[in-house]
Image (cartoon, rainbow, N blue to C red):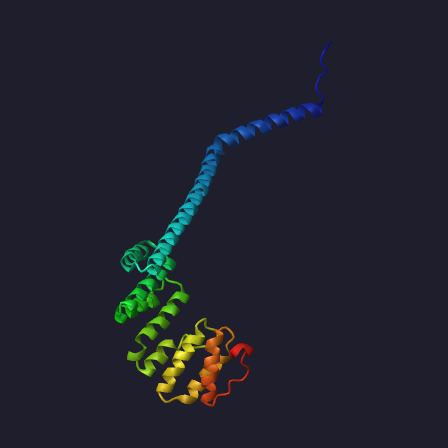
Length: 231
C-alpha cells in the first residue's frame, strides 16, 4: 500500500522542527559552554557562601566558649588563667567579643587597684570606632567613674555632654554624674533641672529615677510627672 504523501501543512511543520533543531544546536555550540561556566560559577559562589557561614558560626561559637571560660575563671577566682584567656579573645575575637574582653580586663585591673590601667582600657574602647556605639558609650561612663575624683567638674560635664540628653540609652547615669559635677561647680539650678529630667525618664532604672527625683526636689526643681514606682 502506497504511503500517503505529506500535506503542505505537515511538510511545513517538519521543516520548522528541523530549523529549530539546527538553531538549538547552533546556540548550544555557541553559548552552551558559557552557560555551563556561568552555572558553575554560581554554584561555586553559593558553596563559598555556605562555607563562610559555617566558618563564621563556628568562630562565633568558639569565641563565646572562650568568654564563658573567662567568666567561669573570674567567678572562681582564677584571675591569672582568666587574664590569659582574655588576651586571646582580645587578639582573635570580633569587635563585640573584643569589647567584652576589654571590659573584663579593666574590671580585673580595678580589682588589683590599678585604676589608671582600667581608665586607659575604657578610654581605648570609647575611642575604637570598630566597636559598637553602646559599648563605646558605656566605656566612656566607666572611664569617667574611674577617674571622677581626679577630674574637674567641667571635664565631667564636657565629656558626658553627648550622653546626658533625654533619649540616650545612658541618659540616667550620665545625667546623674553630670548633675553632681554641676553641683560641684555651684550650678545648682542646672543640676536640679537635669535631675528632674532624669526622674521623668521612663527608660532609666526606677531606683535611679527615684534618687534623682529626691535630689531634684531638694534643689527646688519641678520634677513633674514621675512614675508611680519611684519609691
